[in-house]
Amino acid sequence: MRILETALDLFGTRGFGAVSLDDIADEVGVRKQTVLYWFKSRSGLIDAVLDHAADELLIVVEAAIRSRGDDPLERVDAVVCAVFRPVVRRPALLGLIREVIRLEEHHINHLRSRLAVVVDRCVNYLTSEMASGRLRTCDPMLLAGILYSTVSGTGTEPIVLETFGWKANAAGLRQVRRELREFVRAALTPTNNA
Image (cartoon, rainbow, N blue to C red; front, side, top):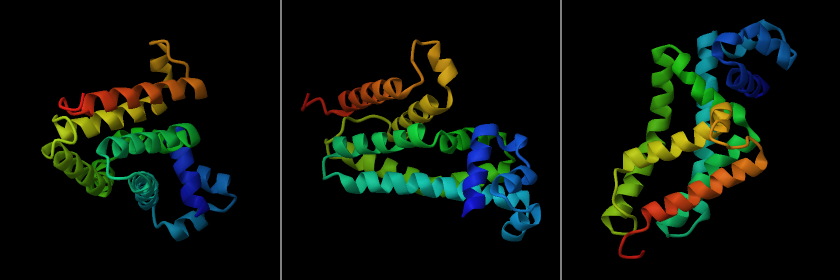
């Protein structure tokens, strides 16, 4: 739906506090009442946008997992690459996630509940692969958080990263992705396979 897509892009680039229902309606080319017909309140629209963003990320992650065989290093690599794509193609998606901290607690909890399923699945998968010796043992919850924050930080904090000499362009993103993939592979390779 155009209203959701537009709201996601506006919230993700300008922030939740800087975007009104009038702004969204103007951008879509409808009246504010049309937005309120589909979403009973601004709060309802925010939750719908968060659901939409979570769905987009979940689809990307699921497709990445299915695209690889049984090798856990290949699957982790595929997920890292898949989550990097929105950094390049749709930075507003990750910008939206970054902006969530500025929302009221019930919106934050709404998004957490949507993402908890995929986080639990990821942590359970990593735990299982570590227990079988196919991945080096570490804290799987911490690993998932570090991977997510690295990828999302790359997309949402380019000015800060420029301080470290990183160029916020396609070549810079490819370099960051390549280095992260190599680092993760080296860090997770079991010591008996190294």
